[in-house]
Length: 423
Image (cartoon, rainbow, N blue to C red; front, side, top):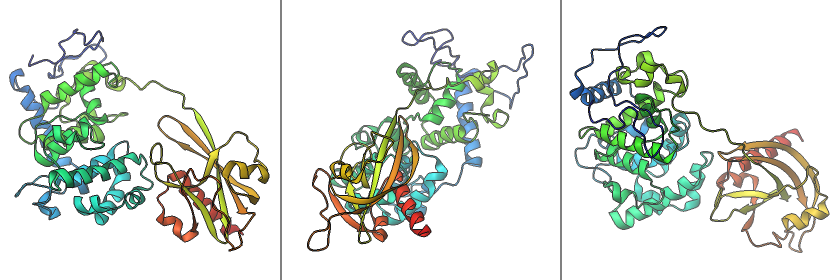
C-alpha cells in the first residue's frame, strides 16, 4: 500500500479506528453484495495521482458557479488582494465567503455575500466601516461573532499587511476568528499554497474513503483526518483540489443518500467496498438542548419603540433588541411588577404571541408583549430607563430596519406589523 495513514488494525491513541489506506475498492463480490467499478484503476504506486486527477477532472466539469469563485482578474481587483496575472479567486472574496459559510448553507449565503460585497467591495472599505453597519448587513445570517471577527481581521490586515490578506497559513492564523480550516482555505484557494483543509464535508469524504467508523469529532480522529488531508493535497492546483473535496461532499458524498454511482473516486472508497457508506461517519450523539424562556416587551410611546443594545460580548453581542428579560412564569406579570423588571412604568400590556428559536446548543422560547408607557415627563417623553446597564434609545418603526437585530427580535417587529394591520 502507498503511505498508508492507518494500516488495517492499527490504533490511534487507543482508539479502535479501523481503516484501510487509500486503495481501489475490490471488484470482487461477496455473497449478497454487488460492487461497481467506475474505471480501470492504475497500479498502487500511482493511486494517489489517480485520485487527484479523477477528482479534479470531475470538479472542472461539475463545480457550481458560486460568486466567491470568481477569479481576481474577473473581479477587477488584481494588485489589491492577489498576484498579478492570477487565475485564482480573489483572497478578500474567499475570506468573506469562508466566514459566511461556517455553519450556513451555500444557498443561504449567496444573497448575503452579494449584498456584502456590493457594500464593502474591497478589504479597506470593510476595515473603515463601523461595526453596526457590518452587523446590519449580516442580520439574519446568524453567528454574529463571525461578522465581528471578520471586521476586526480586516482592520488588522490593513494595519499590518498593507491591506492584503497574508498568504502564509501561520500569518492567517493570527487574524481574529481565523482557525486552521479557514487559514488553509484562504491560503490554498486564493494563493495556491499546499495547505490541507478539513470541514464537515471533507471529514465525511475522508471517513468514507478510509472506512473510519469512529466519531470524526473526536480529537484523535480529527487530527488523523488532517494528516490524511495533508497527504492528499497536491502541490499544483491545491486550492482547486480542496474545493473539489468540499464540492464532492456537498453534491455527491452527502450525509444521506450519497450518489455513489456517480462518484468520480468510488473505486477508491473502502466504505463502499464494505457496504458501510450509510453507517459512516458515526452519527453525532444526541444531546438534550436546554429551553430558555424570555419576555420581549415592545414598549411604545408616541409611535416610537424602546430599544436596548446588548453587551459587547456574549450571544448577539452589540445587537439591538426590544426590552428582553428572563421569563420566570407562564403568567404575564401585572404592570406594577413589570416596572421592576424592565425599568420603566407601562400600561395596557397584552401578549402578541410566542415562538421558538433553536440554536446549536440551546432552545429559546420568546413571548412578545406589547405595552405603552405609563408615565411621561414634562417634555412629553418617557424616561428611558432607571437601569443604565444597557444603552437604550427610542426608535420610530421605520428606523428599526436600520438597527442590527437578531432574528428573534426582527420576528417581534414583524408581529407588531401584523398586529397593526389587524387594528
